[in-house]
Length: 128
Image 1: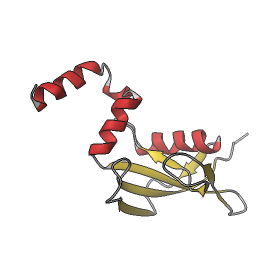
Image 2: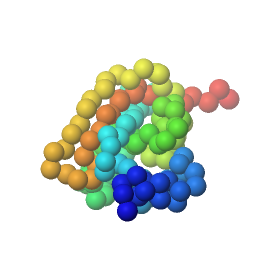
Image 3: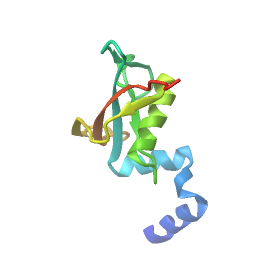
């Protein structure tokens, strides 16, 4: 089977590209750079909120919350989803990133190439 035939087979197995299976998503991120959002969330006192990570990719410890932008997801959608998922909170944010950083891990095969965008966020203040 040729590469083109294999690609066609994989595409036909994924009914909706916006909802990749975990296995398909893991494959895609092995072969292409991923775009990350990182959230610099400050509370009203100016303290930075962190998230505890202890998984197969990161050593245990406190990290800036964030994640990978998914297919057809806007930056705003990703930022709001990550704040809710990792900190269980809503945030307000500046639309322009504070910093953009390219990360390449030459030895790793998984999660080895990123373009990370750091966004300034603050806890959402309910109008009520």
